[in-house]
Image 1 (cartoon, rainbow, N blue to C red):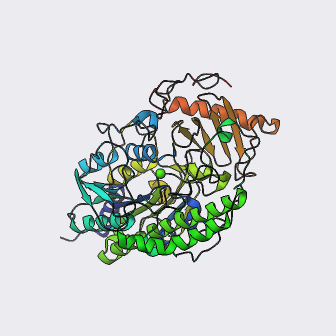
Image 2: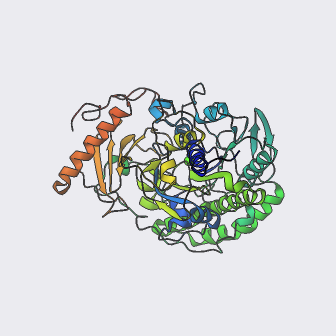
Image 3: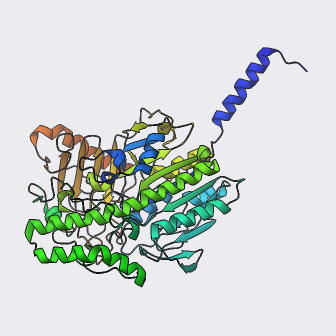
Length: 523
Ligand code: CA
């Protein structure tokens, strides 16, 4: 039967429209590292030029680089809980790494994708205390795991693997992709342990930087003037907190085989002897520690980048690349000597901002850059959007799909709410909440023995060194931002008083919020 040409055109148009409206259902390969600072991804072009990351840069070149991806609570477990639930810590109940256990009965991204016909797997660091649920396959490090010859728990069974953790997590991820059912789409969470403390590189990479001397960050010797007790009373400086032994490798890591230990000692022992002979003190000692930290930390990043290259090659070789969205991110950022610090936790940019690179052939314009405020809360809704699964009401992010396709919605968020709890714990960073906008960071340090606000103009002061809270020149901006933080606390259903478990550590009892910190008070 011959159809009139107009009918053919109309039918083709209808089919094309139906195709566009249908869920795209790509495979999802979500590679996440642990504590990978955006300053240590060369695609972000940080001024110290700390390292070249050619494989991560390839994702940026072939996909989209997000310049303002933020996390809601810059700590390993809480960020992961937020990623898989699409909710803030006060909704999912995982506030800190001290006393929280993830409630696996709640709605999660992997459960929803599994129900929608995806094959789901998580391989690598999990760190949520309870076993993973919603995964066809899981293979996780116990707790933090170790770098050399680690044990992983495969669907409940502990198996020790010879070798280096970043290679092993990648090998296991490749193995899983090879044996999956090719008829179904998949979501694989390949979640690396590296470059988490205590920063132990692959033995083959120990000499990767040829004893380079690293440029110092401008604020390495920050005296915290103009800022409050929280900054003065933290315990996370390279100078005081970073330990010479395991952090700076004056002692040999546990768990090496004798052969591995020989390789380790061939590199570190002569360098450690030269260091000890110099008897460094004061700033010179801090600068040496910073350089050793950079060597070890960036050596771990080299291993991550090389292994991202292996995963991308597999996608190329198998033809999977065309229908697989590849996401690279970290559970939060990291201080690389800024403010004299290592670690994370703070609302400040080195910590709350995390790298995000997404490649999605045919949908994302290659080499695009997005400067919208996006977050770790957005991943779950993005993946649900791709698969056509309705987003549960409790989720608190937004789908990134329109941004990936080149259109940031006009009503996209322009202020992101942040809330950190764990105290005193390892680094003695006081609980605080606040908001981050394009230009400003506003924070309220509210417990247990403090009650003060800080405001930073990141346009003029990108290093967040000069607290301008109370400066009359910023009065109107300050009022608007404070109103916005309380508006968001209401909208996000923040309780007026924190959950008694929220601080973890030695603080099991609730601390009443002080004036100005409840949802209704006006500052
Ligand atoms: Ca982390």
